[in-house]
Amino acid sequence: MLESKVDKVSGKQLSTENYSSAEKTKLSGIEVGANHYVHPTGDGHEHVPATGSNNSGKVLKAGATAGSASWQALNSGDIPALALSKIVDAGSAAGRDIGASSGNVPVLDAEGKLDVGLLPAIAITDTFVIESEAQMLGLTAQIGDVAVRTDESKSYILKAAGASTLANWEELLSPVSPVQSVAGKTGAVTLSKNDVGLDNIFNYPIASQTAAEAGSATDAYMTPQRTAQAIAAKTAGLGGDMSKAVYDSDNDGKVDAAESADSVPWSGVTGKPGTYPPAAHQHSGADIASGTVAAKRLPAASTSAAGIAQLNNSTSSTSTSQAATAAAVKSAYDLASCKSRVVLSTVEPAGANVWYQELYKEGTEHGKKFFAKALGRDPMGGVAPRYQGIQCNWDKWRQHSGARQ
Image (cartoon, rainbow, N blue to C red; front, side):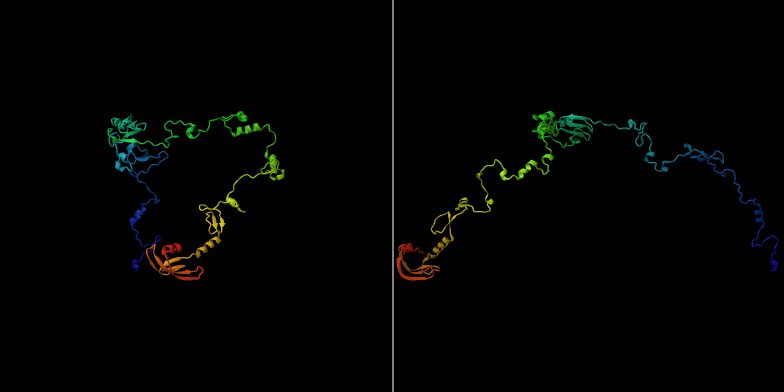
């Protein structure tokens, strides 16, 4: 163990690294100041030249000798030729040649216009005034030409080649004027006052002040000014004060001098007549609300008209203008109730007052005889005696009794 120990040497340090002689030689070759750099010289090792203040917009160009470069302006010779496909957004026209042939791009002149030789022939529209369809179809016309037909008061334009074909002509429609006539007149219209309902209006001038104050002109109109002037002239010499404050001092709308007439007593009215005879007049029946109307004022009743009628108690009167009273009607009723009903039959009828029972009859209808019994009923409710064995001639009995078979 002692054989492998290392003795310490004065001025040296112990380390686990083995420091070789080669490393010592390498370190010994380092100059003083180990960060010092020496740039290589020659082509490819030159620095970019300073821009200065005069090289704005310039590019760095290589010089003719190796290692030389300087700032210079870019010219067309410095740009190589590029294919159109390498240029972005060049447009379709960029690939066309300049010229007048098909597919070329024409160039404008100094005034910004195309050369006249590049423009197609332009047809000038002609207008033909004709009198018939035959003349229109016989025209030597081009598309766009116009034919004015005086026979129809219409115009046509040729819309397709071939003026001799009617279908190639198109009628030109003119807008219809909203005014077709004026006061029933057409064409060049000249109106008079009669045409517009002013036949009673006269074309008078405005009256002069002199004419207005004179008030004698019949052929002039008065304006408010002329009217005021005329009134002032006519009332200038009348005198007095016509202001409202004077004639209507209490401002109640009445002339003060006339207000006293509202309360004048009857005795204060002069010139009135002594008597007032009534004048003939008529009133409507609706105006009569009270009192009694005299009978002579009312119409009489008849079988054909309504009116008033006199009452009558008679039961034998034949009047057609009088009315029966209740008493007359009752008397007629009682008289009618006392009449007997006489019946001739083989079986006793219901409701008969006198019944003649037929027992036998002989002979013809007008010469026969019969035997009957009579049953009399008193109209007051009593029973009359019964008679039997009556024999008489039929015709005489029927005339006497009014019986029916």
